[in-house]
Amino acid sequence: MQTTPRGFVSGPKPCPHCGRVLQPLTADLNGREVFAGWEPCGCDGAAAARAEWEAERRRADEAASAASWERKLDASGIPPRFRDARHPWARRLAERIAAGDGLYLHGGNGTGKTTLACAAALICLRNGMSVRFAVATKLLDELREFGEAQRELLAALARCDLLVVDDLGKEGAATPRAAEKLFDLFNDRYNSQTLVHPRPFVVTSNFPRNEVAVRVSDGGSGVAIASRLRETTEAVLMDGDDWRIHGKN
Ligand SMILES: [Zn+2]
Image (tube, rainbow, N blue to C red; front, side):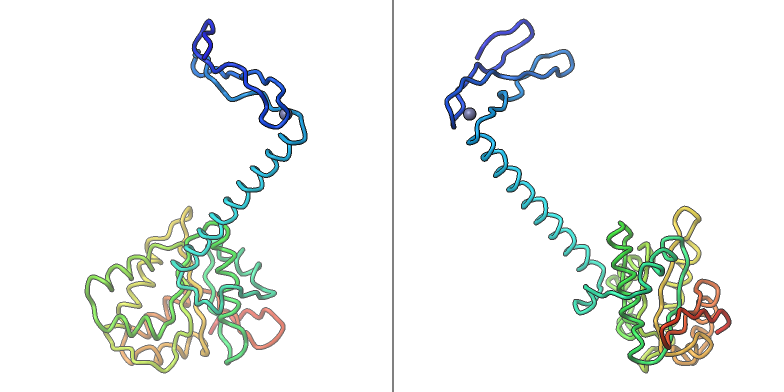
């Protein structure tokens, strides 16, 4: 150690690669002179060691960001087989979602509704939005019971930036109570959204919005859900290569 007018710093040391004597560097920290390592050596050995260290740090950063991406994917509930989903309309859909617009993707089996919904959701997730994906039949099944676990699930689904509900209206076992809870969820998101924090949904279904009601529930909740969806989503019929908007159904 060496005393300087403003503090203590380490003394010079030889480069471990070429032996040249390297002077200590200092930095000013709130008026105190603090040791900030030694001057970098220009020799090949030192340059190679720096490159190796940077490569190592880059690998560590990449591993950390891959792990954090995996965690986000797991938390989103996007099924593993859709975690690399791509679709030519995905970017456009993601832009609409980011602007706060909800979308109702309907069309027959094999038209790529879930692929499109997931591809857009992945873009939203990469852009920092929180995303939750729920399969409608599983969700309605889960909501047949109502306890602490379901309360937490609904709260999480209500809070996220984007909620994807897949395959709404598929033959399932929705009890009136479960359908009511699903309506509450849509309603919560609708009521809690603000201009600054929209809470859009993307819903996929084999059926247009005006037919989905009776399939979700015989009672009033199905009708209420369909009506909420008409207010909060734009219908996109997926039956070919075009982006066809069907506002009415
Ligand atoms: Zn050196």
